[in-house]
Length: 440
Image (cartoon, helix red, strand yellow):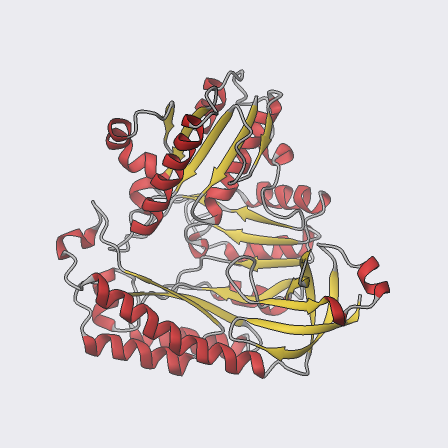
């Protein structure tokens, strides 16, 4: 069969889809990843169920595929899987009967079997066979499944279960295989990477893992995502500081700064602890870019609390920041708090907070003008070469654009996605940089 896998949500879902594709390809199926394609025998929608907007996107994507089938793709089988299905399978089965099969987050082998495959358990190494849905020069390295945190607003533990680390040796082997396939950048992910190792080794082992990956994988860049502020492991900071191939980059969703809100969120850290951690980063990793995510409109967030959060963003001067409106989730500890902040007010706060950050981002980017950076080329399109510095993660952060009129004929010939180039920044915008190649 021709099987199209559409992945929604986070990068952890991306890895799940790629591992599923490995199982299906091992049985002779042709598998591809294309949200726009209508040419397939089976379409699998790997859903997200994290917040309201993600749920809506998942349902709309399923309905879109049903619409395509109704308009002429008669033989196509529609399969839905992943987080949304894990949470709401019974309701979805009733509401969308046109879907042929539903699977939760622990049923990847069953999907392969039900699509006509033999039992691949123990007969296929998904690490070796895993096709990438990302550009071939970067890949996500998922180091654990599930989460042992109990953040009041988050349904992930209900969906994914308890934290389960993958052994270090296995991860190093997977990293070597990915690098041998041409991957230049490994992006380390899990629901909480700082928890890594506590279940397997009875200690936090993120620093040890980063050291092993830096020393043994051969990756040019290693990037750390999804860290947690409470009990941040010092040896992970040491690993970033001591290895040139670990990017000076920390992704750390802080969610808020008000101590009362943080306590209600069950984050395990208060305002003072957050400020001390950020100061530690700045002292020990002075060149690091810090990316965070914040929540506005959490139950009990007053106008004064929001002003405190805005002032925190002004003072912290994050290199990258995202923000989303609180979404009440069934079964979470915060459910009983209700949803007292009106949606319109939440959206106003999102816009206001992001405006503060955009001004900071523009100032930081303007300070880069005239400086040179080693950049990884992501793609070449009609506007020119699109690349990234080590301070930027793909899909979520800034890009460096080198317009065609700034590229010599020789450089055009010699530059391809996955190459490293040296770029001098010539101008800046809020979310992107413009430059010219000095070495390719």
